[in-house]
Image (tube, rainbow, N blue to C red; front, side, top):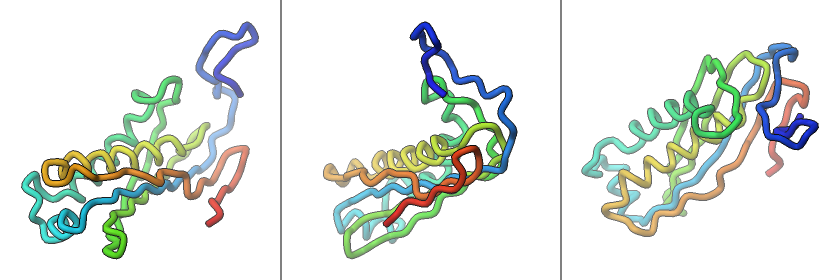
Length: 156
């Protein structure tokens, strides 16, 4: 499967004849902030509001809009999207994990990655006025199931 046809011209991959399967994808991301920023986030003292609640909504919304953001990405009928956040005080960071479920002809990896990325960007946006050193990193696929390539789990 390629984004290029036999003449070398770009096109959307045709998944019409593929069978539908139950598919899942989980992705991870990390946002590192200053210790004072993390404390304010934990205590609900960020002036823009409840950072993690807004970041969760942003991630879910982004997962649903992935095909509008990534060229040639198929629109998917996502049946479940969720994000969880783990605050790691020792490294002054927030670890984000997305979880996407659906039945379809193509995988949900891009939706899981997009969810984590939008969530991380939302945290950045809501905290940038008090912390100019925020870093977004470690965005990667953790696990995926379904489809021709089967089950994948990232090795630690």
